Image 1: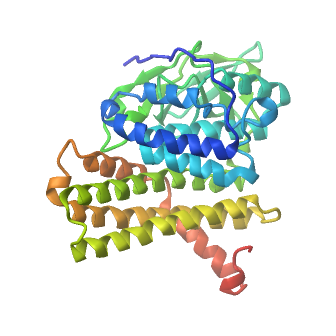
Image 2 (image 1 turned 30 degrees about the vertical axis):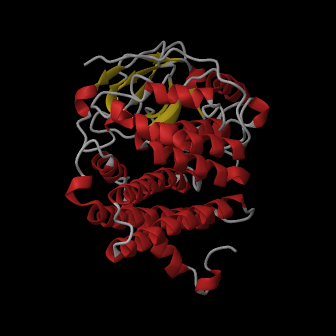
Length: 387
């Protein structure tokens, strides 16, 4: 099935400072939440919501200040980045998923791109182009076939291509003939792949438009290749980036918390001792997640931690926030009961979206790696992680 609906690009205003970017995301969150049911359909995409993000300067915000951004991707501003992601996830997890991929792609470009590439793709982001990372593939993974003119022909497809048909600058990985794993940035508004929406029949996250994307036959120039083979998997950035999607997930948990409290207030159930007890438990879970994000940001902003430590701590963060979300959802369900799970109440969609988004790759391996780190480092618990 061919699907393409590239957005009309908007001229974005100057991006806010990192702190104001988080504030802008917080102000957008209730509007994203109210608008979410309109795009909660298979094959749909939150186009209007991303126009709001453009207008708020949030698409350019991850760029360095010198290139027209806010510096949101810089390690010193990790807390502001995680807060921005959390607030967007609180409004709409599908929007948060795609925005997290946008920030990830711009971070990879800034880290591995040549100066001319960085400037060119930064200008695209400042002009309103939407970036993302497409790495997952099935049996027919993407390959780069060399051409006599120095370019490459693409063969194969990706799955879970979030924002398919709406990302104009997806970053994807492809196998070189020698087995190397190469990144490239595709100008998908001019080199349009084939989008198969039939792949995306999900439990939740319908509006993320995570289709199967076939690139067979497209030809890219050498300047579209990003970095060296294998750069995508360099640590600590590959695994350490898990704190970003964990922030979006925690935003979804916060939305469930907020809606549970609103529902109980509307029913006049705030004096019920059992409801109060459950809200106390929910408060512990949400506050715990917020503390984990603060700890992750503090570690990222501190000079000196080695890659192994950063990765092990990121694995703790993603594992802890997954556990927080999985414990929070059934508590909220008991609070609102069957009545709260009826539309148009938002709980049914929030639970579907968060349940699906929590299924990130290799959760068991991530937790086991954190355990390996603890076993191999004999420092006492109070010194296991840098203070």
